[in-house]
Image (cartoon, rainbow, N blue to C red; front, side, top):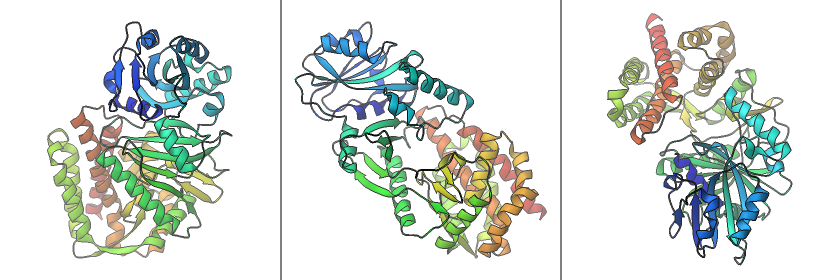
Length: 470
């Protein structure tokens, strides 16, 4: 099973005597809070409620196609009342979302449930259709139920209670997104909804050192963006950054997209380029080219333990560095604030303005970094193109016309302009090597990251060959 199930613990009340009752094999996935006790009764969690002695609150993980009304009756027989019920979508084996089993909430949580694959989009359509009938558990039976003793003072889940204080609203509900599997960068994201079922905030919750660093970087970037006067690009406003009481987890709360934003646009256009150009011009500064090389060299050394299994990727990075050294050493290089994950799924559009979120990879980078990131990831992951096709597109008329004016407005010298693509590819390949090496270390399936890394390594070879021919 999946450690992302730890997100279920945020639904349980903090403090007091907590009992965790699960179907067979699920309790081992949970990092039990201090004082909590877990059991896996024969016949399933709902058949073992009578064995719970004196627990003030109970967290139940079970797979069942019976509705919440029937579950309430079973709880009542054990002297318990239901506090909340969440559907695990798509399953305990892949717990991407924890959705309140509430018609209005499911109908309005589309901003956080953003399935990209055909299979995931189909599953979400089925969920919404069954939700209208009031029975989503018929297809998605995995459930997380929180119950309390009738004699216990009614309380909300730990995360809900904390965010109620932050938002100064005791009528909120949460949809919890668990993210991709993986320990190092594991975060949970909560969509915070008010009594009218409107989204009023998003909260990121980080537990590990690496995840905390990313949340900290995003908080810093949001504050920097708030201090600017950007006309073409908007970002979430920072609401709260700090530590969650009790758990010690790091929490960043930010505002949601504004009303009236449209669905994502899958191909780079002039609006993206103008917005990125404005952001660069507002934040541009000069750094030593040698400092950029030194930083990448240090990253490569840190990752050297993964070389045996990823030799092809390491060879590509080293080739990139060997070509970039003479282009950057002893020269100044312009950088500006870069989003770091500028892709269609992190952008909403509203006329000529765009709302860009998920700034946790923000850093100072070379111009065009975000534009290349958008083009390459959308062309590969959405349109299915390989390295040769993408390179031809980057060199072709369409993208040359789009990004050419960006470079001209930046006034970059020739040595910088020629280095932009190989520099981006070398840096982003290091990022992917870090991801896949951590997946290997913790024994987690790497998903598409390994395949994307191989495609980028091939693209880097083509870019370096093009420099050599120039």
